[in-house]
Structure formats: C-alpha cells, structure tokens
Image 1: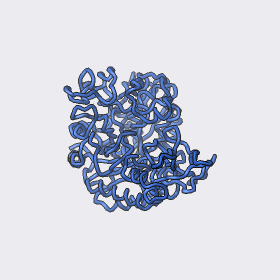
Image 2: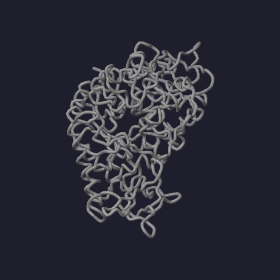
Image 3: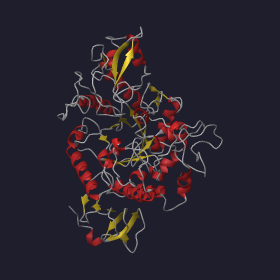
Image 4: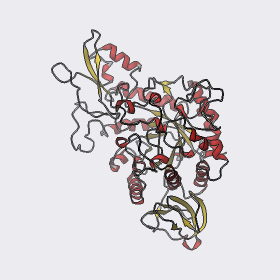
Length: 557
C-alpha cells in the first residue's frame, strides 16, 4: 500500500509529509451540478494514492453563503449542502486513511459569516448587548458617528468597518471586518469565542481528522483600544497583526491536539516578514508547522531563493520545527503563469489584469521548481492542479467572477478565481471529466479549451508529462532516506545554480542561469525536469543525482 510512510502509527509523519491541497469546489463534481463535492473527492482517492501524497488539506467545506469561497463559515458542524453531508465527510476521512492518506481541515478563527447565528443575534440585540461583545461593534467617530472607528486597511481592499442600521432606520454602530463585510471579525478577548473554537477542534478530532490548518493565524487578537497603525510598530504592538496574546490561544489548542491518540497537528497560515517572530509560533507547545510564504513570493533568481532557504532553515532550527515548502495555493497565481513573467515574484498588491507571460518558460521553471522544493528539508505542499502544470486562467468572463478581492478593488485586482478553475480529468472538451458527461450544469468557472492537452488522462500516457514528473519525484522522495526532514548541505556551484546534498546518496542541482551547465560528478541521474544534452543541464532545469563514489564522502558547507 502506498501512502503515509507509516500509516496510522508514525507520530512524526508531519515532519516530512507531502500534503495535497484540495479546493473541493473545483476538484471533482460527482452529481453534475457544476460544483465539486465530497463524493467527487472520494471517487478520486486512488488518484491521490497513486500520486504519492501523505495527507489532504481541505479548504473550508462547512455550511457557508460562499461570499468568500467558504472562508465565511456559518456552521462548523455541518457540511455545505453543495459539497455533501457530514456523513460523507466522515466516510471520506475513513476511506482516505485506509489508503494511507490523512485528512487536514481548515478553520477560520479570525471571523465568521455574517449569516452565522452569533452575528445575526448580535445585530438583533443592539448596542451594549452580550451578543455584540463577541464581535467588534463600536460607535463611529464624528459628531453623528458618521466616521469609521479606525482607518485600518483591509486585506480585500476597501474599508474595514461597516455601519449597521438600527430598527428605527437610523444609522447604528459599526462592526469590524479585516476582510469583506460578509466576514465580521470575532473578539478573541471573549471567553465564548475561545471556548467555541476549542469545541470545534474536538468535534473534528473526534471524527478522525489528523490536523487543522489555521487561516489568517496571526490576525485573531486586536488591540481593544483600537489605535491607528503606527508608521513603524514595534514587534507585537501592531493593533491587528502578530500580537503576543495570540500565543496563549495556540498553547491551549496544542494541549487539545496532544490529548488525542496519534499525532494531530496544527498548521498556521502566517504571513510575517520577520522570520524570528514567525518562528515563535512554532515553539514546542504551540503550532507544529506554518506555511513558508517567503519562498513562494520570491522571483526565479538563485541568490534570492538560496537566501530564502537559508533564512527559513535558520528560523526553524532553534524551535526544532520542520520547514514547509509550497509553490502556490488557492490564493496565489499559478506557478506556470507566474514563473513565465518578467517579474516572477508574487505580491497581492501587484496583481493586475493583462500581465504578459511566457507559458513555455513558466512550465520549464515550474518543473524545475517542483523538483527543487521536493528535495528541500521538511514537508511539501502541492496545490491541486500544479501537478498537471495548469496555468492561471486570466481571461474569465467578468460575469462569472466570484472573488470579493476583484469586486472590492473595483476590478483593479483580478482576484483569485483564475487559480480556482475546475480540474481537467479526461476528454477533449469541457467539462474534461470534472463533471459527468451527462451533467445538467457547466462547471462553476469555465475551463479553457487548451486544457485538453493537460488532462490527467492525457498526461498519464505521456512519460515526460508534468504529472509523471511529480509521481516520479514523490516515489524517489519516499524511498530516498536522505530526503524529507533532516540536514542539508550546500555544494560549491556557480552563482546561478543551487546545488546541495541530502544524506550520502542524493544531490540536487537547479540551473537558473541562461546557459547549460556541467553536472557535478555522479554515479547516476535519478530524475531531471528537462533532458540533459551532452551531459549538460539546460537552463531552468533541475537534476537529481546519486553522487559519484569518489565524492560520496565529501560534504559541502
């Protein structure tokens, strides 16, 4: 059986796991309504087993109005009817584990849906009520309260406060939302909020999930004085980000996770530029791992990526936590598109319509990057479709767009729908096996016709496809003792080449220079992202090597 290295029994599984992100809405549609569902995921579990993943991370599958793709949760104890039922989720967790695949779910503790019973009760109860104390309701500034309580910036463009209307029709208090107005922020100083989320963790751990990914994990605590943001806030003193009180919350969550048999893990989504502050969340009594967004954000340049690798490993070492590596997720531009651009870095603020890209270049670099990341120490995340080399769909019809980032920016930001288009499984025309052939509805976002060449069915029969590259890489990663968690040593190389050793029998060489380079002495080539020519590794390519016997005892510094 292929699956986790020690299914069900290895308490350290998370330190080198390959974790596949499932965006349910776009993975597989079993009932033909154009929206992915849990039955679709269950039908494709053998695909994930054959790919070689250890765990699945699901974006929110809970009951939700879907104002932000499920990150506006109305009920954590119910599955959204578009996706299925709680019973189906429980069956999925069991069936996946039988194949050696663990399940990680997503929680969104910063906010809830504006349709959540708590928020509806708060609106009905009025100013000064216990119901409103669970949120951030405040009177406005100005003579008539017409000005927002603060001018804090939004993560989704626009304002962070929305004014309510009292029963008599007059303007009322304002409520805080760091994201959209459909996502009111919770007040984590309130004991009800803390108690409810601890019960949510237990609810899902009781149902067999192996871990919890924590959305916007550095944003929960706000300064109750609601000060404006200083020009240069001291560490821990930003009014909404990375406040020191957060660590008590995650210590309590860790105690709950550790109370369950087997290792149940906590994974933080933490966007922080200060790597030392980032590492504080990974102390032994807090989170197990957190996403490393620094590497993802960097352009395709060897010096910057090497710096990112060094900084990441150095930050994790003092707390004994493994690093995580990821090329993309449901929020960022697909690597095939991003890495083919003149500016191959990623930043939300820089996203614009019509940015040109060279998809052939981006695909070569994505292949090289996939091997590079799989060779680094720690755990590896793969966003669904990256293993197929899917590109960002940047020409979606405006009337099909759903992402609030697009609408709240007035259309300036293209939003994130382009990386969320449903997967192509088979066939030569849409829906490419995403939905049954006799489906009544088309996919919720349209698939480009060019994806006919990128379906799972097509790539399985092509030895050099992106899918088969991923499968081969994950097989080697599983079988090679030096890979996964553990030490790494840089090897001497040209400044545009990343070369390092893992263990005694594995060397990675990634060529980011504009010319082909000579490979170091080796006994065997295990895998390459592009064919070598006369022994040379072409530009934008990675090779995995078994070092030559005469160099096997040499360890680069």
